[in-house]
Picture 1 (cartoon, rainbow, N blue to C red):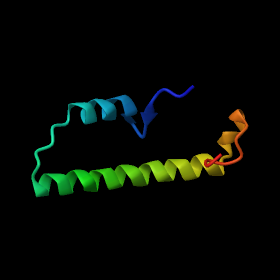
Picture 2: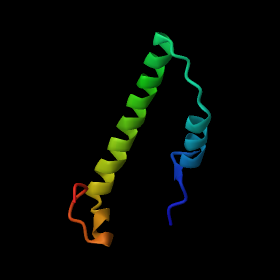
Picture 3: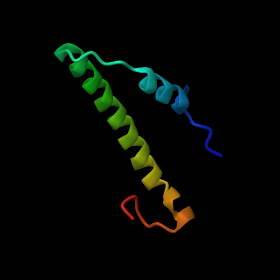
Length: 67
């Protein structure tokens, strides 16, 4: 069963950090947080590719991630 752990860091911990994040509307801070978001998007894409390659979708009858 999925326990929310990814690479040693919990998804719940990430959600907590994001939930408590206070962004100051300064160009440098916004630039940094967008860089972090890009890194997270890349990690999600890697996980989706692996998920799709393992055909883990079959458990719910879907034939692809899009479906």
